[in-house]
Structures are given as C-alpha cells and as structure tokens.
Image (cartoon, rainbow, N blue to C red; front, side, top):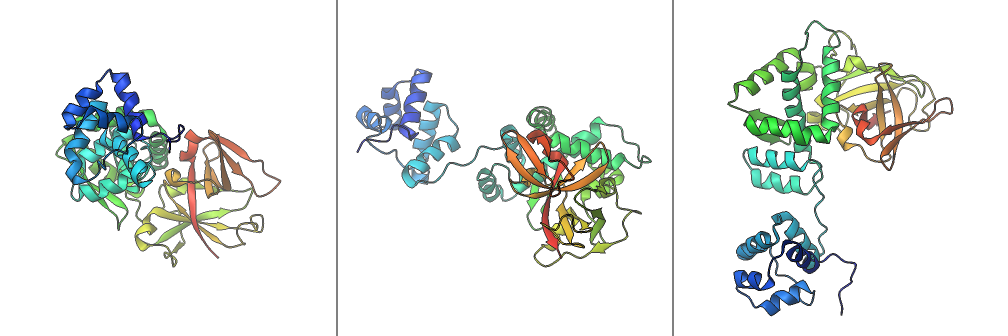
Length: 354
C-alpha cells in the first residue's frame, strides 16, 4: 500500500532535511553501518524507521540527529507516531526557558523532565517562572514598603511580565543564564524551592520575603480569605488580595475536594443577589486561584480584573482566534473583548461552594 502523501512521516521529514542541508544518503548509510538501499527505503516510506527510542538504538538516534541537525525529541516524536501512533508532544510555550530550567533542575530530574516535556506548560515550569520573574522584578524596581498599593502593583507587574513571551525568552533567560541557581519541585505543596550561591539572587529572595511576603509566599495562615462580593454588574475591590492584613474579616477552610496544599493559592468572593443565577445562586462562594491565567481554558468562569476601576468581575470566557471574549450573564452589561496577551488580567474560578 502506498503511504498517504498528506501524512508527515519520518521518511519525508528526513528526506527533506537531508536535501536542505546538502547531506548525502550514502554518508548517512555508512555512519549507521547499513546499506544505502535500506536508507532509501526509509526515506521513501517503503520501510518504517527503527524504533530509535529503545536504549539499544541510542547510537543510531545520535547519528540520525547529527545528520539531520535536529533535536532528539523532534526525531523521536516522528518515529513514535509512525510506529506506535503516539501523538507528538506539544511545543513548549517557552522553549528557551524550558532548556534553562532543565539545566538547573535538581533531584529527580529525569522523572520530572519527562512530565514537563509532555505538556505545553507544566505547573512546575509555571511556578518556577513566577519565582524568577519576581526575583528579576524586585531587582529592577524600587518598592516603597510604606506604599499601601505596592504589593498590588508588584503582583500586576509580575503577571504582565509572565505573559510577555519576548521578555521571558529574552531578558529573563539571559539574566538567569549568568546567575546560576538550582531548583526543585514540591508537587504536594505545588511550589518550587530555589537555591543559589549568587549574592544577587539571595538578596532578592530575602527582600521579597521581607517586603512582599503575602504576594510571593501566597500563604494565609487563617484559611482561605473571603475578599468581597459580586453581582453580574458590580465587582469587588481586588486590591485587597495583594495584602489581606487588616482588610479581610472572614476566612473559610478548604472545602471537600480542594486539596489543603492548594488553599494558600486561593481566595473567595461571595455571589450577591440573583443576577448570576444562570451559574450561581445567591450566597455562593466562588473559589479563585491566584495567578492562574496560564491554566484558563475555553468555557471557564473567570475573574476579570479591571485595572481602570480597581474592581474585578465574574465572567464566562470564550476564545475566538487571538481574542478572548468575556461574556456577561445579564443584558445590562456588554460583553468584553481582550487580546490573548492580556490574559494576566484573568484568574480562574476553580470551584463554587453553595
């Protein structure tokens, strides 16, 4: 049976790479210790490639990668799909940052790296990037501890920076490429731990702990804070989230189904009235995860932070191309449209308590 001409096979990929690079099939055959006819059959699709993911074929994998000047994961993805119909791994959201984090990952690197490479953005990567952004920003900005809104401004600045692919892949990678650190992932606590001999990084971490502990530690010893109430048209003051001390009088325990280790990352808002009755009843508590813009998917209920008003609103999210549509559940309010790059203004409602 002739191969489907529309399917991107390993043979098609390899043949095109060899042609682009001006390489020789004969030289590849010699390097692999096989006949040129065998290589020709692979490149034309008459034979499947060997299973290069097996340990015994490790030297063959290296030879193919060197000849094609391609990363191992790209070659292996094509082979796995052709032989086992395993879908290719998603492209990383931040490729250069992933390489940096892989280089500095501490214990159990092998197992975690496998998990990371199976996702576009692994939670461990997301938390590590959050920590690196905070360190970078605290070094680049002057923060007045007496400023009541300093913590809020710091959190917003870090959130916007994490959305900026050019910044993460450029300035952030360059800075931490020169200031070496080691990091580990605590899956139970959903957090990362960083160690560095760099005085610059050590001082930055200490400054973050001293000045912005509520923002960076994301820990509330009294439980999950209830920070305000919302209707379809009226929001709540989200600035209190950055610093709950003295502003929040009500806390709740983590409800069933919510892991206790996740509680420090959450806050609550209470639904008031019937304007959101299509989704939530009067008095329902919405549990919102801080900094969760990277986890938001089409159809999620989100909290939208309106920086111009200093208030936050409950919306239903729909993606449309490069835009995100924030749907209102009342005709009194218009739908809002924002660009995907502005998703740092959103946080995900992960659960509701009725």
